Image 1 (tube, rainbow, N blue to C red):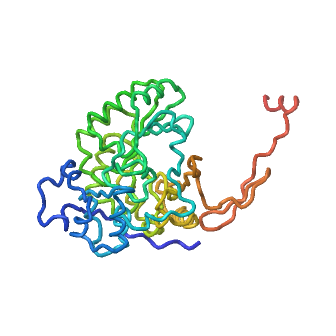
Image 2: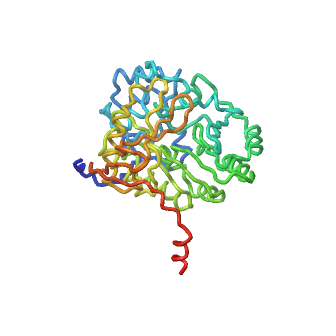
Image 3: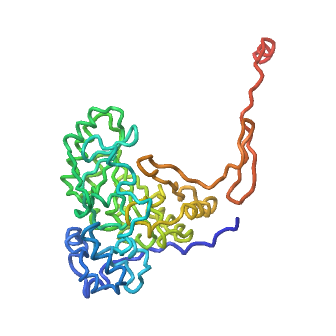
Length: 395
């Protein structure tokens, strides 16, 4: 296999007020201001973007399927005249969201069928997903939980916190709780701390995790006060969600740095998206920038079979090709595990290039990243030592 061309040198660009505002606002760095001033209407989009007919129709549809909301920070990354902008395609609705492929599902990960109490998903033996809110800073158009988030989905997220805590207290085999939703970091510091403190009071819970896109959509939320509160609840891990290198602005880099400085291990979960990051060079630039931000690439997800997302799904073959292009040509720390969340609730299944060519009881034949073939022997049974050989060994 030929070595891929080098990616562009990682760069971090500030996206403080640009065409969003004619003059910088003194409140730009306040996360509550960012939330209050999210782009949520067709009228505001029309002021700043040259919308296509597909986008215009998609925005009109958004009020009945998955809400439109984009923070000013993230909105400033969008290219005004480019409908194929990888940032734009993630958050601006399109009419294709109204089309369902024969394989689309409302609940592709089978969460509703693995919910022993409202708001708590128990799919794996030792860990649970705790849905603590139905709101996000911005709404990704491929959202796996579009049925329950944003307030306009086909279902309402109902979480019974006290029943969830009782379930966790009773089930001592659970050791790991992931807070998600929606996005847990949109809760106030005091509300989030109340949840973390209650969980930390359950002796068999070994560590806590937060899944969030807030540091990317709303880096202003990662305040020193928030970080100081979070560090009280270690071991606490965080999974962030970055799909494209342009999302890693200086503001995002600094927000991630504040979290890392607070002792929080950071991993990234990307979704493989057609026309956005299904390209080896883009993916390589992304993972290298993540490492510079002290974030380890963790998962690369094949896009779930969520209704209305078929226009954003790319082939599994493309995902395998990207992983194969990375393996051996960059640090192992930089390479995420490519997974499919098996439809219907089967859990995450790792998908890898075929490096095993042959395997029997005597040997395994493998190929490396260069396509070279190697043979590795399986262990063979050694002869049983007899009395005489034992005497020689002990002499």
